[in-house]
Length: 77
Image 1 (cartoon, rainbow, N blue to C red):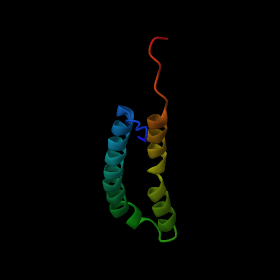
Image 2: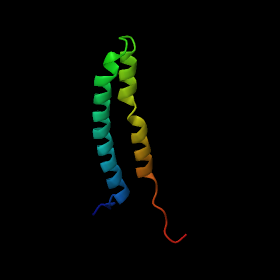
Image 3: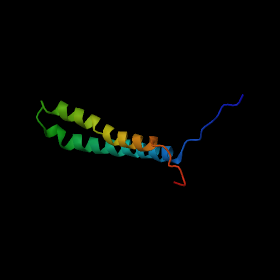
Image 4: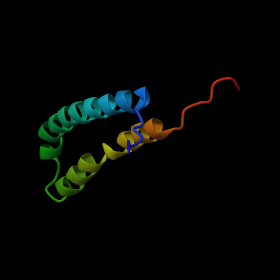
């Protein structure tokens, strides 16, 4: 009884690599922004800015995930 194994598409590999790059680049960007700008903000505003900065990476990640999950185009028509 052999199980059917579906080979992941190239789109998923590219998307996974893009997610990895996104997380690393965004983390560096967020650290630089937090160190430079957010620490100078008023103390009541800092938690709000940290929350926004901590959640902002989700939107580009969702776009990458949606792109990865698109069905393959059928060739021919």
